[in-house]
Image (cartoon, rainbow, N blue to C red):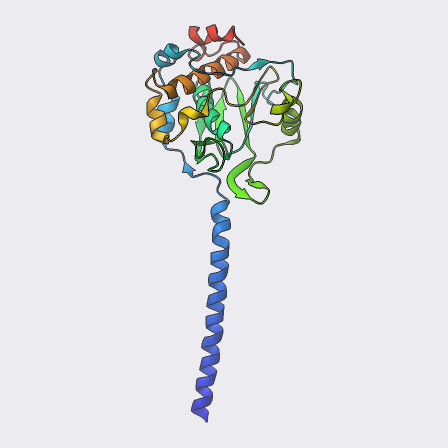
Length: 276
């Protein structure tokens, strides 16, 4: 009887332990997807690739000029948007799922790097279910930018991770940032059919871009490395698109900085300013 009672007691103990282990494993498994989804980026951008695209010789960019860039900044008399240090503030509003944002980040990084330095850029890709699916790109989420000429304020509102209402939330814009987009990403600044479109780039209240400045098609089926490599060939369609757009973005920024520094605001760039 005593032996039989001990077996029953041990069985109950081991049964309880087994239940605890199962519950523990369920908790771990259920938490894993949430942990993975909290990261909107594929990883940290390769230092090699970042250096490669931010140190493109002006001799290459000058050959391209406007390239195949199809959209330039529009001059506006908007609400002044400057940083606390008085520098012109450039607001970018986008999302990681957005294929047009994916395309636009390449020339933005090239152009902005002529005036300052990025750190902690991430890599990501556009939605796999949208046009130009899985466009390889960078993410501004969690990055920082330093410059003595301008301030850059990026807002990546959503990830590329689908949920029941679209995509999961990432960065929350401030009331000022949201107000600028609501005001200037609408008629009469853009057509009613384009209202609310991204990317939205607001250049200190002086210039505005809504949409990609070149065709995302040129980046289709390309890797980060193949895109970066193509930028060294001024005859490539990728360089014509990315660097042409970067040159127009640079010209817009040079208008804000009174053509400083001269290393960014080259005669080629100053020539492009006339078309803004």
